[in-house]
Image 1 (spheres, chains in turn brown, blue):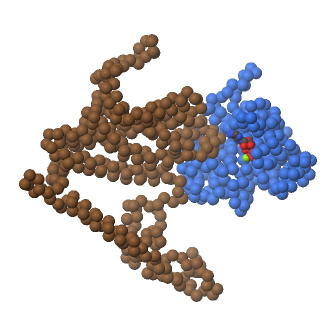
Image 2 (cartoon, each protein chain N blue to C red):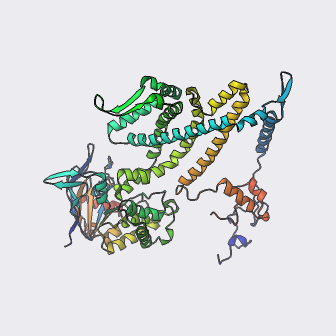
Image 3 (cartoon, rainbow over the protein chains, first blue to last red):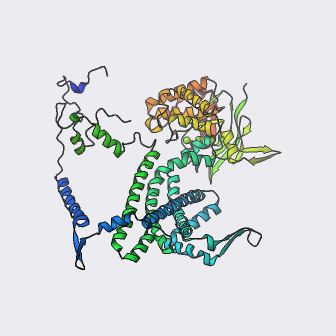
Length: 352
Length: 254
Ligand SMILES: Nc1ncnc2c1ncn2[C@@H]1O[C@H](COP(=O)(O)OP(=O)(O)O)[C@@H](O)[C@H]1O
Ligand SMILES: [Mg+2]
């Protein structure tokens, strides 16, 4: 840093083929000025989008209709607002969240076991994992849910023991298989089949040299899998798992057919009594929507966590970017950075 | 004469119908550096992998420090060892790969200490202390918290060497450690290996660096098509090869 920077000494002898570094537009420090490319198409697209958005906002919030001679707001926001925080809806949301969490946790656990079985050298183990996946992916979830709901009919009680031999444990399924348990079972067992394939894809995406290096350090196969392979597989596994979680949140509404008291079921109960069908469906949708949004943010940070070492430098999070942008000194062209975020360097704000 | 560290007698290995090793006999004594050369596909990597039982041999006998790596011998029979027991023996044999195979989700220090912590169940403080020491030894004291992808190839390979050394092995295996490196980075890695040899580490090195083989190697083996064609002191094998195939190979690469 002690020597003068050559780029700041214009007219250096013999410097006619000098490379021009990119600087802030509007504040050229070099001999040549960079004229940013214009994009008229973008402005047209932006205008169209703004127009459509305005129409949507108007029809959603500011338009009225006449029903039976009474003028009221089109989407009955007062009713949506009233039921959004009602006890029934919140309880339903709680059950939906519990169902999603249990089904995903069970599914992931099952998926890990099935995927490891799938990669086992033992053909019987591999085969049984394959059959499981074949069956649970090959039949509709709705049918599986209905099956578990009615399982107590086929197995009123369930005895664990040696076939044709002594019994070890005894369950009374009739009392034990509540709608919630049936829904959890159905969703988790189904999810396990999908998670198994996702996790297997993650495991085989990790180079074989990693296992070899781990084994040459003296790790056992399982240690190598747990400490070396699975953490690396996570990068490949997390995006589709986030997808599955978000999808599960909504698939869990299928549990309403087996009278599990989840969000959609509770909403249906309410509108069966008061006929506010659309407002209550809006309530359910908005509840699903905000939980999905939270899950998406969670997924973003989880992905970042497992990207450690995968990229040389992690890009800043949207929050970090916003904070830095607000901290930019006025002479640093805050607005120019908005239009050209890639080309204008964040001077003076090194990566943390 | 020192004790025998690696001993191979009639080692054979095939993959399906392909015979990769067809009767390998050799001996490496403690403190010796054995270099192996030979054309691609000769079976050099396979032999190294057999030494630490990453591959099972089909015939013959292969011992490290007097012990079979994958088996226990009892009244004339060989009993296969459990995964964990093989691990305990492998832990005493360091291996360095052509493509480094560092763990990309761990920093240099974590790469170096994961073995001592998880395999030898060492105390964290002691393992970290030695990990830093090993990284210093390979000239990377300032890269302790760097992830592999933030390092150059030469630096990565030196971390890989430190990782193997941190297990305090009695034998080090190198499989073409400089073949994937840019030419100007090769010497850094070779310097580390040379200093290891000077400290008396027993090493088996598959390499195409003839200068290294000549200066550091105690003996040189030329392998082709699964057999040892020629062996002896590096200088004599390199300057006056007796065998036709050795001559042909050397004339191609020199
Ligand atoms: N796991 C394996 N399965 C089948 N063939 C293999 C396997 N590993 C190595 N080979 C074959 O064995 C031969 C020797 O390979 P290798 O030991 O890697 O040779 P070198 O390291 O001397 O180049 C090659 O023909 C290679 O294709
Ligand atoms: Mg090889």
